[in-house]
Length: 515
Image (cartoon, rainbow, N blue to C red; front, top):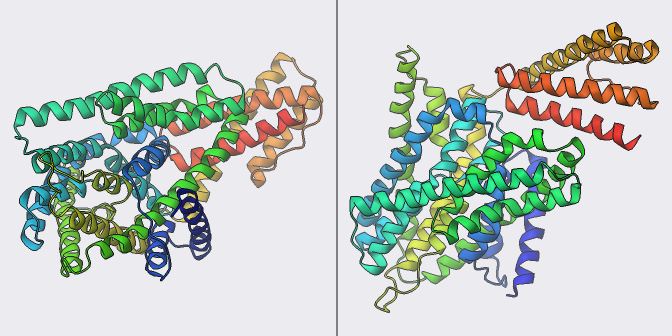
């Protein structure tokens, strides 16, 4: 099948299915995977084969960048301890348990069983972000599962490279080599991510052209990924660091008009890539199953056992960690609701797929890698099972556990914040009255508009006159500063901040359009 036709098939399939998922209020990634499997099983549908270059270089960087950019630095600082434990300890435990289970239940050499364990050891940032976006989780839980999925890749990549080296080249594994590889991947990715973020920050703070700013935003994840990979670091880690740093600086280095345009263009690109890659995961499975035809009929139950092992080890790791965190707060009771949600939010996805596709075809001695097709089929099946099973059940579990914020709570928080912004604007207007630097009639009109917002909600006034627009922009700057303060002191969460910032940006852009 031609590559252009493949891309068109993925885009059309992904767009149609994602539209139905939104209308039915079900997670799009899970439905896309199911649709991909169904389409791949239809007679006459050409085989669609994903390449490691397509997944890891073209698709992965912007999706990880988007996930990291959504993560507020304030909330990340609050969860760095449990994130570290999960990103290192749980990955090591998962790789070991899956490797042992795979070696026991599947006809795999021990070396290839641990390659499979390393592939499936880490949760996937793209899948976790896509599934978590619609759950209205409390900020701490959302950031915990998302940060874990972003930062555990360095650990799993180290394990994967070492496991592949042992399986393919017969390389010896030592603590020194493990430590050195981890420092090179994680440390190199961290440093290079900061370097790229610094360079992009210098460029963007001097850029006023929305088109150029959009191009820079689209190129940024690829720049971080390619630079890190070419110098031996972790491209994924570099993209994560770059996105988190720049995401915290975006409101300070961009204008309202630029933010709105970049958000629109980048949102479209992310939707297409995210939808296409989950459909691709589903389409891959029938092809891999056909490749195994007659060689190992027991692979389906083997994949189920491996999936169960992944889920069990995650529960056994998360619950004690949750209890320890509760003890640190002076509470001896386990918060089973939060621990259950965090344990179940461990879907695998794009990163494991990219890793398993990169397993070489031949060993260093020229012989085919033993049971490579079985490893690919088992890994892809586990990815599909977690995306479907956990994807479809995570939202009901969150509702049953009672940890999600209700729409009423979100609306109340936004209404309170909106009043606080209007009050900050009114306080600034009082200063303008005292200074007598503007016509009282214009100040009165602005004052009535802010009072109407306090009494009736958001009721933007129609801008007329240069003086009115100038003063309204001045008030918008005051409201934006108050919004930042409300977020920094923990009064509002990141979702409320983003919604209100978009409202302020839209009004700012409208004032500029009417100038």
